[in-house]
Image 1 (cartoon, helix red, strand yellow):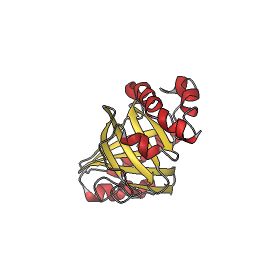
Image 2 (cartoon, one colour; image 1 turned 180 degrees about the vertical axis):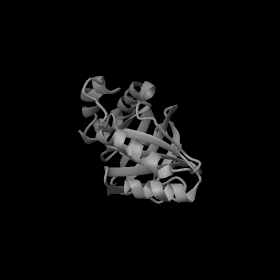
Image 3 (spheres, one colour; image 1 turned 180 degrees about the horizontal axis):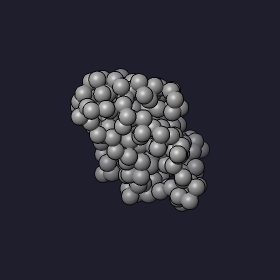
Image 4 (cartoon, helix red, strand yellow; image 1 turned 60 degrees about the vertical axis):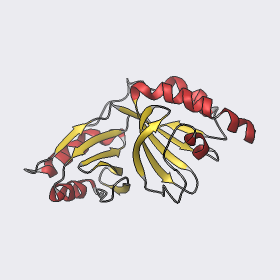
Length: 201
């Protein structure tokens, strides 16, 4: 069984053209309906079994994420807290992936919760992506401070986001934002990008 997204409208569907217009200074593309499963566990054995079921590794270092390819395609596992992780994959893997994780937990003390509807995702890149983010984010995103693989929960323009550094050198980032704040964040990005659009035009 897979998730049926055929009748769903993404939180930023109405913003697609305006996000496209931010280029070439900033490329912003929504990646809607990703499978997102919150895992809570401090049991190393359970985490190892769940990782094996995913074909992915649960990050051991705080504020990092891993990316692997396994039976559910490309899977990212984000460290959100000492015993909290977010597993992200393509929408069509949502249901079977949840079942596999629950089976892998066994009798261990752990929880697997489908939080796919909670957030949407924005992939950001471009020559001024880091500059634009700096307008509203207190995190130092210089590659020396936030290398590739960094993952933090922070505020961006007063909106709570999970920020992933996908390629520190080229300035490629992923933002996971609550669906109810997505339009607000898109509007903020559009405004923050104005001076950089002029600079590269």
